[in-house]
Length: 575
Image (cartoon, rainbow, N blue to C red; front, side):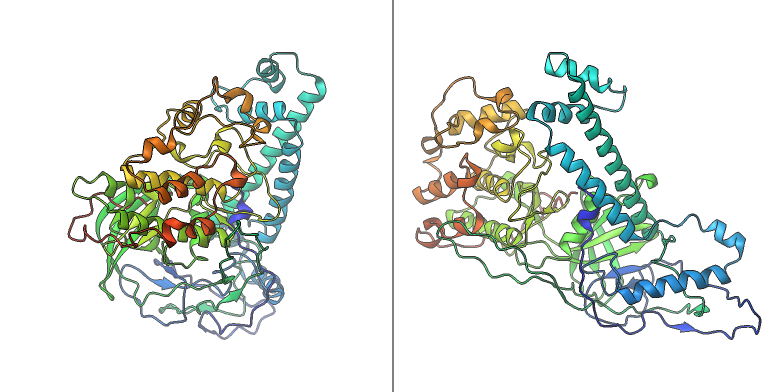
């Protein structure tokens, strides 16, 4: 994931907001070089996304809202703002003593400069990488995943060993060029992380957070920041729906998240821990409603703000759907950064493992429909989830299902397929094309995972439990049969096909294996979701229009039979 991916961009200009800070102006001395003493607030702050509101400050948490464009763009500025920042920079140079300038640290480049440099580095790396022949591409993929300790061998020796022959000079040169381009891209990524770290700590970034000299002393009392207004985004590229499916109308306006009425939360108990931090159940002391506080772990300061957390925040603040977990706001306290999320009592994996819970056919149909509705919304918004599994699907006591964990999600181009990493999605839910090295893909990878999850709803356990990539394919072959060119014409063109191709031809056992659990219409649905050829796999819109949901009995019924149970498995909310 590149730094630029999680920076929303927009060229739309917005009307000016009211002043976001109130200042008490101090008379300037009648001297050629005025000076002003700046008082900076250092107490904890809370970041809210939503409607304008003025809040008094409670103890513990203090609330602010993002600047006008924070909802759509963390870093973009209007031309007027950029010019103002330049003037502010010059004014700051006049009033800050020389020794103070030295202690503030070296300013990072303006984010527009960072984005431009990162875009160039990313484009060069992608271009060189995609131009490699398949054998060299596979060799480069293997070389780039080698651990840094002990140091990897020289590229020419690695290629000799990997290819089983002496690598030609031109082959070595091409791989070395890609490797250098990758390192340059990673350096620019690191600069982006430094930017986020500086912004998170209140550090100085050139042209962004400069303080005007004419604004002498910052008011020390509580500050109210104007909340963002809805800003229209460019219309997405139209995507042709699968046969028989109608395009779902979608708004491309990033809807602002509601601002909390209070800045106070009381932690109740930890409910989970992810890669980048713990999750707590908490209580709003104003609304008295439970929320989930997901703390972003930042133990290694040199690593800056975690990229996956930044990606998740950026995407969640743009999404609003009944089957997608809602990010309510961001809060900061004593150096800790928290995501405030709506609280969900259970995750799907925990419910399926609970001995007292058994879903009826009507319950399974409802949960499947809600999951596919959430995926349909994401895909219409040009977003791939890329980590669909039971622990990332949350359910509350009202039987409502919501998709969570957007740490691996990304925006994709609908008309122009691009190269993405195939190291996504938990192994048991990973599609065959990813297991065979495919890097050009779209929503179909999420749909394979959805098919696995629907089967899991019926059987209460994961279906394809492989131990590694090769064994995972063997497990899939044993149930669905080996793919043929007739049903998957491009299978032999996949990068790793020769390495992982089936040793023998096996017929499908899918229908006979699951006929005792699934109805005929349910078998048709799942079989369409688990189709080998990605281009023929059911998309979410088409899946929602199958007989399973429209015709076959029983009707959908949300599961609420576990309403009195203590949460049997805490929501994961992992990053």
